[in-house]
Image (cartoon, rainbow, N blue to C red; front, side, top):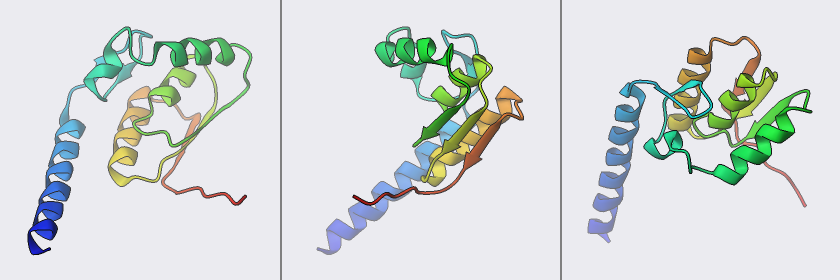
Length: 122
């Protein structure tokens, strides 16, 4: 039992180290043309290809984009690249820090980001 707690603590510390490193990565250009800091996979042409195509089509007719569980903010930035006012919710501290770095890089005043957990009831 004691070893399990030590390994869990080590895992948490390692994850924090990885997140600090990601926050130091340089911004890169996505296939959609906006600057972003995130996972390497997010810069490839095949990352969530169907989702990006669907959202890109929907963004042409939308008036606003609300992203619940925004992670690093890829779709927030994609929506802004279409000119949509955007609201983002992200409950995980490390993800929210990256989201805010990406929002700041977009330089947009039309993005509202909340560090909050949203829950619903059945």
